Structure formats: C-alpha cells, structure tokens
Image (cartoon, rainbow, N blue to C red; front, side):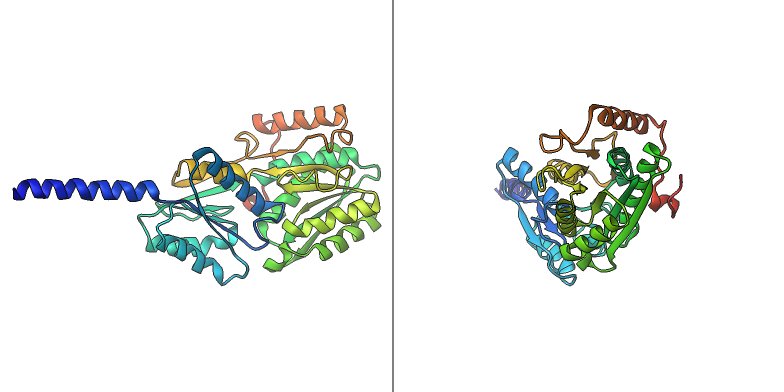
Amino acid sequence: MQILSNVKLGVLAAAMAASFAAVAEPAIIYDLGGKFDKSFNEAAYNGMEKWKKETGKKYLEFEVTNESQREQSVRRMAEKGASPIISVGFSQASAVEKVAKEFPKLNFAIVDMVVELPNVQSVVFKEQEGSFLVGAMAAMASKSGKVGFVGGMDIPLIRRFGCGYEQGAKFANPKAEVFENMTGTTGAAWNDPARGGELAKAQFAKGADVVFAAAGATGMGVYQAAKDSGKLAIGVDSNQNHLQPGTMLTSMLKRVDVAVYNVSMGFKPGMTVLGLKEGGVDYAMDANNAKLVTADMKKKVDAAKADIISGKIKVSDYMADNACKY
C-alpha cells in the first residue's frame, strides 16, 4: 500500500508540475515611452498581441514610467511565475541579469542588449542595415542633396542607426550632406516631441529636405515639423507611414514584433541576431508612400538590399567598429 501511495504521490506531483508549466504565462515589460509610442514599444506590444491571438492565451504586462521600476517589475513578474519574461530595451539589461540569477528555473529575454546567462535569450538587430536602405532612399528623394537624422538618447545603439543612414545616403549620392542631432542623454529623450520638432526645423533651415528620426515618441515632433515645412520624414521601428501620409517617405522597420512573438512561441537561450537576411529589419512600402517612392528608387534600394544580404555591400556597424567607417 505504501509503495502504491508513493507512486500515486509521484504521479500527482508530476501532474501538478506539468499543470504549473502549462499555465505559466509570458510577461512583457515595456520601457520608457509607453506601449503605445507608435514605435519601439508598440512594435513589441503588437508581437505579444499576435501571440495572444494565435494561441488564445493571456500574458502579463507592465509599462515602466521611471527607471526605478525596471528591476521591481522584472522581479514581480518572476515572483508570479511568469515565463518567459521579456524586457524591451537595452536599459533593462541590469535588471534582467540580476533577477534572472535569482530565478534560474524561469526564462527571461531582453530586446536590444545581450545578457549572458543560461536562462536568458538576447535579441539584437542589425539596425545599420535597415538604416542604410532608408538613407539611400532619402538621398534619392532629396532635391537639395542634404538630409537629416534625429536620434533619441545619445547612445552607441542610436549612433548605429545614424551611421547606417549616412552610409546609405552617400552610397546613393557620394556628395550628399548629412546632418545629425541627438535629442538628449537621459531616458526623457525618447518622449520629447517638442524637442524633436525643434531639431528637425533646424535641419530644414540648413537645407535638409528629408529627415530620419530614430527617437521613439520624440519622432512624432519630427514628423509634424516635416509636414508643416512641406518636407519628407522617415519613420522607425514600426511602419509609421500612416502617421503623416504624403510626408512619410518610408519607415525603417525594426521587427521588434517578430522578436517578441518568436520568444513567446519558443524560448531559445543565447543570442539571436536579426538583420536583413533574417527579416529583422527592412523598409516599409504601402499605399501611404507609394506615390513618393518611384519605381527607379525602389529598384535601386532593393538591389542594395540584395547586395547587403549577399555580402557584396558591407555596412559599418558603429557599435562594433567604435566609429562610423566607410
């Protein structure tokens, strides 16, 4: 009887463990700017919503509004048994690293930074490749030969966008002049549309007629300034062509939605790198910008895309090279 009882207890314990694993929900923690920033965070939200729609399951979420909440929110999700816990943004790296060590049986993921732990999946992108394409398109669309770039927080990651953009512009037009400004040095730089508008207007005043914003919600000010000035703008992360139809030349797609969806569908520890070849970055075409992009422009950009994928064109990575090399 005792043996049978032990067997029953073992079966029950296994069933309970399986049940717990089955009900474990993924969680996502958005960074500063909010999940509806129409850019980086919103792309992550769209990825989770796709997972939810396809699986019929629920997920937990939290929007960070100040830096002190990062570690608290990751730990709170871990205490609830969520897995994987997906942190969106490089700024959450230290929080992920600390909490992942405390909960080694749970899975964690971070987008835009690498955390080297056995229970962490790090997803990073080749932003320079997608930025190269929109830079080439900007130079081809420009009538002045001058284009601009407005970055958010001044960090190497955003310099990577600017570096790729400048390379693409000069690939299409070796004489192109590229203006570059960063919004700030703190997290507030991601959510300052007024400052974004000021920087864009200053670049327009110097002759730029196309400006690319890689600045989260700050980009909304850049796009509005472009519309008001009768200039062109380029969106980032999500397809933002619909925000100011007729003004948005294109958007540099950074498929954070794909990254988040893939992690939710199947956690894979280690580093995942998404570039043009993997469908992680691209440029956006739709009805909103169809009249702005000529067949010749699209043909040349697509040719450059194929050459980058094949390795014929090497795009300098600011973060790897510690400079923007050509």
